[in-house]
Length: 429
Image (tube, helix red, strand yellow):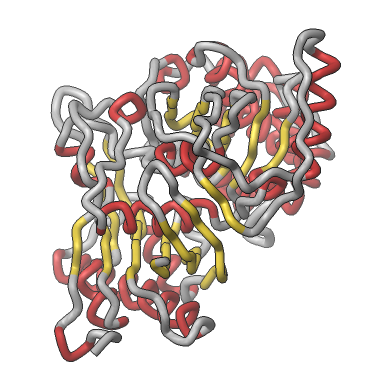
């Protein structure tokens, strides 16, 4: 088994998610065991600087270099901290870094900038580090995102049920996983009690469908298939980034997020506004597609607030309407761009804790069961970090792991750049 640390800080810039995992196999028999996971917040001054840069504040080249290295140092500290929990046994690090700019391809290649240099992380930790995962896919004409559907395919597919894995991070993105029967040599080791409930629910909806799930969730996550012919994925639109910006603005800085969606739940969404917003170009664009703060940031929020003025909405109504936009954009994506609606929806990311948002997704996509990835064995808060560990592991084996049908790339490529520590710094010396 190979112990790998996965690191990522998402569009919300909440902090660095770190996951230490044991990985074995390749793409046909992948096994992942989560050993430890934790989130390490950025120092407040560094977080503020990152958010300023994401918002378009200019930097000199010297300031950019300093910021790049400061982020790398925080990532290295996170890796060292979590690695100490297992006696410094990690053999590899996969670091996504911090996205500060993302431009999807149009008439030219796309561009995506993640700060937190892999070579700095490698030398500070003494552990080989793989970073800059998006670059190779972009160079092949792809969006460079989302990159986790290939991992979702191997960790979250089901032999009987078609699933949508809906990440509710700073930006929402979906992975569509069509059901594929297991081959005789394959056995899935992760099934939960919740899945048994879902089977019963689906059986009542489909007269001819009968199945039982008997085993409980285990700690190991094992792949169920290797084909990528039935996987789709794209960014669905805004999620936590827009909602957090709204909460901070509407509370005049006294709050940074809507805990459990309680504030939004006390309001009433303006459906007319949501319908107007959904007519915007991004929501109508067919996949492959990706987005970020460049579109759904402060300027977008202020445009939404301007649109809302004539409706005399309360602050709770405004937040409920923006939450409804996230739910409605997911519903719109599924109904317009999927070949078929899924049998199950699995939520993950910070937004999966937003109970009001979950309720709205359930309402718009009834009768599809809406669960979380945690209910079938994959932590909702660390799925992305686990995915970075797997991508790094695959890169170390020279396995091509992008999915052209997801990103629009012209070819399958190996993702990530390998950085070896200076010999004197290596942990295995």
